[in-house]
Image 1 (cartoon, rainbow, N blue to C red):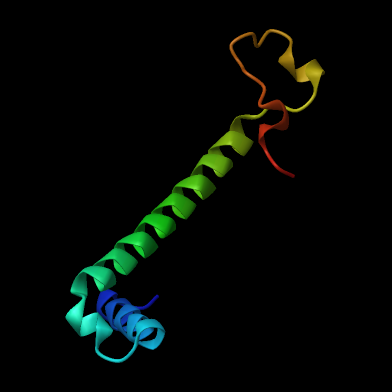
Image 2: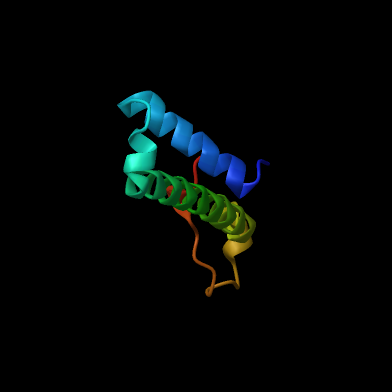
Length: 81
């Protein structure tokens, strides 16, 4: 996994590639927004994977397994195969 400085340099280079050379230097807020957006996307993806893993571990399969387990809520169609 690249270090944060490498990611920042990549974001700067991409902003310059899209908007023209020197744009990132003149608009550091744009680079910051790109970095924040990427970090939020990564965090959301990591949390979504963790929630899916927890949900899969909690799901009971089959109605026969539900006898005597009134406290368990079945996920039904919430999980994708």
